[in-house]
Amino acid sequence: MNTLTRLIAIAIVSTSVCVGNTRADSLDWYKQQLFSPGEQQLAMEARGRVMIYDGLFDTDVQRALDEQFDRVDSMMFTGTVVTDDNGEPVKDKETGKVLVENDGC
View 1 (tube, rainbow, N blue to C red):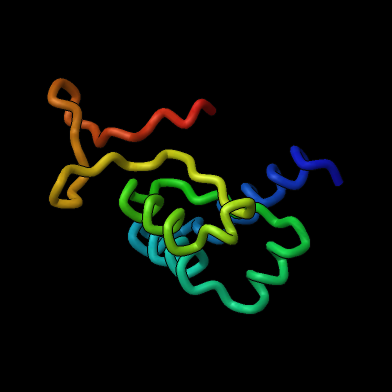
View 2: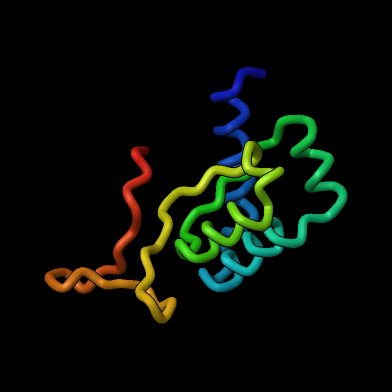
């Protein structure tokens, strides 16, 4: 299985897990996988699994890069929410929408 096919499959599985959950539930699940991975998660990463984390706060991403650096090859972050100095999401002054980092995708 090539890398692109693997990433697409992981995205589909990740999305399927989150269907029907609230955003908070999804973020909690992502944080669990990111900061307290189980043996199965670590084994899958050792076999090349890449987990796509969508919608985490920039502070969570930075924490992951600091605390989980040895696993960074197994992580992809998209739709990262920009936060202010208090850790609250920053909103666009014109649209009122939460700002997300441009991940180039």
